[in-house]
Image 1 (spheres, helix red, strand yellow):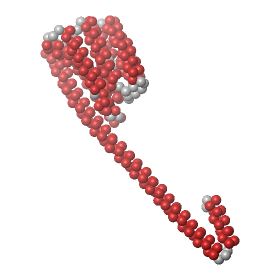
Image 2 (image 1 turned 90 degrees about the vertical axis):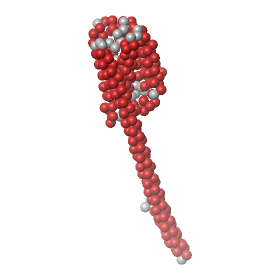
Image 3 (image 1 turned 60 degrees about the vertical axis):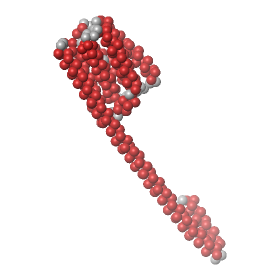
Length: 288
């Protein structure tokens, strides 16, 4: 293992890693329910899941428990899938991103303690500080991180799998580190740091790509709204022109009818004038 600790120290380290990792994930998700209630559900569920892990540690031998530990990392997915409103792609992206950071902290902590030949009890203040920093970063960077997450649509489905690749690679390194010593463990650390560096570059590329994609989407949406506005203006101008033409016809008809009535009245033909007026009124009533 990267962290060859005695039994109770291993459980204590697992507790710190487990709750800090789950806490970071809890911060970064958006929920279907009120946030405080979601936090309470997560706290209760993750405590129960950790208790299950401790129970499994007592029931299983060392080899089987080493297999159980990575499997247990996926248990919080069940909780999040039930209460978050993010899509499956976004859940995977957030979940494995946090697992990447967690794995890097574990490997880095083990490397520091191992290379300094320090007592393994020094591991606890180190991982507490590092995981506290992770939680603070999650709070501080939630807004820009959510900007990236919200950009993961169907066109970028493959992007959601990238963190999983890094995360599974880190898990593999942590798993095989128990079987190597000497120069082998140094190669494990070097490979882990190389993966971490590559992951940072990959995330930077994802961020820039998503930012450009959001900018392009914003421009396309603005263009669509502008076209819609121009279409409405053309429709309104067409309606205005139709109303103007109607008014011109009404004025022409009124002038025509007025001239006829003036002619009839001027020649003393009052009965014909009255009949003409009645015919106009009938036309108006029938709408013809």
